[in-house]
Length: 91
Image (cartoon, rainbow, N blue to C red):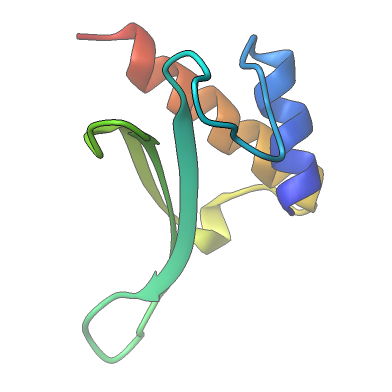
C-alpha cells in the first residue's frame, strides 16, 4: 500500500522522499494506521495523518471506513491522496 500511496501523492504534486535529511526544507511525514469502531460491528477504519516534522502539528487528517475505499490498493491510495490534498487546500 505504501508504494501506491507514494505514487498517488506524487501525482497530486507532493514531493515524496524515502528518507529525510537534516537541514532540508520544511517536511511533512505521513502516518497511517487502522482502528476498529465501537459497537458490535467493530467496523475497521483507516486513518492517515500528515504532520509537520519540525513542529509535530497535524496539517491534514483523514479517517475513512476501510470498506468504503476502493477495491484495490492503488484505488485506496488514490482516494487517500485526493482526500489529504483536499484537506490541505481548504481552510
